[in-house]
Image (cartoon, rainbow, N blue to C red):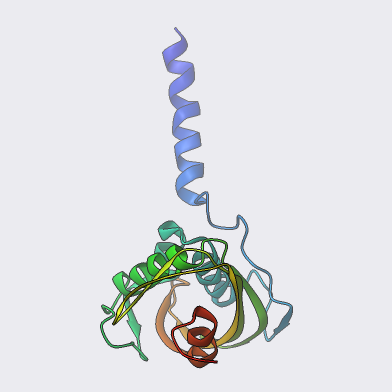
Length: 179
């Protein structure tokens, strides 16, 4: 008669798993400086999940952070709109910088908006695609900043993103551009 006892336990575990995804709060970066909300506020939490996605490359975190109708308002040429864009960009960047670290230096929450200053670091030990072909890393340090503005919907997911990063510094560090 163990089946009747196990069925409620299995149901309870599955309900817990559905209510609290495994990646929901695991290893989410804490902002060094936070203004306007608690780190667990749904707007701040969406931004922390998205930063954790960029650090880990884990698509589960991107799906938790981004709305189904996610729009990148500063979409780079050649990158698909929606969830596919960040997934593609993360995969390419993690192939080049497998030990990527992302720190949230500053976070400001105002209503349904959150701004972040993100610090990206790591070593270029992988391969980075360029228009001329692939570039193999030699272990050079990667250290650059990005600024993001997100609009977070009522469900606590990022629906819009305006993103600026220091690509000049990044491309010089990768060796794509001369220092």
